[in-house]
Amino acid sequence: MTLNISNSPIADGSILARFMPQILEAFLKILASQPPVSPLIQWHTGWFLRKLFIFQGKMLSDDGIHIFNTSYKQSCECLQKELDECWFDHILDTIKREWGSCKTALEEPTQAKDPLFALELAVCQQTMDGSSTSSHFAWQRMVDAVKVFLLHLQLKALLIMGDLIERPILKSLNFPKSDSGKAFTADISSASFGSEVPLGSGIPCRIAFSNAGIRDIYLVPVARGISGKLILAEKHPFRSQRGVVIAIAPLAGLCPKIDKDHSTWLHLRIREFDPKFTVARGHPAKPSGPAVDGRWTLGFPSAKACENARLLILEEICKQRTFVESLLDPLLQDDYMENMLDSQDK
Image 1 (spheres, one colour):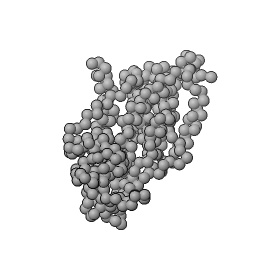
Image 2 (cartoon, rainbow, N blue to C red):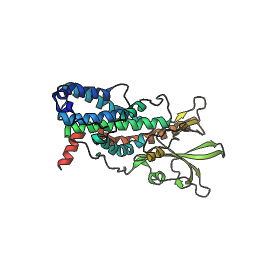
Image 3 (spheres, rainbow, N blue to C red):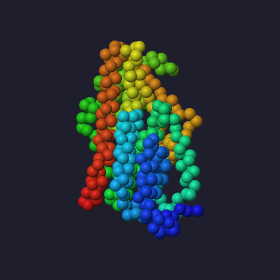
Image 4 (cartoon, helix red, strand yellow):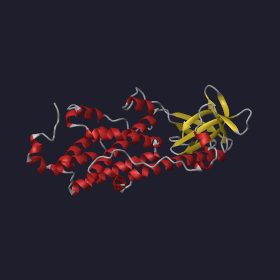
């Protein structure tokens, strides 16, 4: 059994053409529905819309244009919200990875469309617990936001340009010459467990490990381009200005908070979920129990030192986020399609 719109008696007759505006609006309302349906349902809806656009000649009524613009704006806003969440540093990589998947899904031949895809839609409506705040659920929410945004971007390209976009136009990853204002930024950003790093303006503090007791360390947050790390280093026994890395955590998602009852304690949330396993498998991971995020508590000699550490971490996170946002911004601009057309003419 195959679904072939172009060869069906209805498509060849006048009935489909007569009710085409209402049919298009019905599909567009699925994209614009609140709360939103799953990305898989939206991608299937986009597939139907592309077929209908081709049949209709890519024309929408005024109401259809309004519905699509509303839905497009919602997709942009959802993606922008992810810049304030714990996986903002993976948004660009996710866009590059999902771009081809979205284009392939929209261009899937009618003959290749599995008639049982409706079962996929039924399964996909069993959504995850949206109240969870773990990095595992936050990751899937970010990926979903990217998928929905890319669908809308491609549909907009189809309406304006008459075709899908082959690949995204993103700014090159040129790092600022004085990124973070520290000469040792490049050295720190490439640090790994056990390597030596310059302590620079690292802030001294203490941390208690369950298997190693309390240790005197230096906290060194650093952002370089889209990458950001929080490094914990012990002072080198023979080189006073150098340290040995004993732990590394991503800057994104740290959420530094000072303890309410102890003004010298700084709590940090550490992402434990590893998206590499999800990406390698090609579909969302479904573990029996999502990994619980880690927690670090650092102790400082004074409340002022603790506050300075919190502000320094937030400053580096802000620099990292700003860099990611600057690369993402062209995709979110209203004139992105016009820029695409200009680049094709050159």
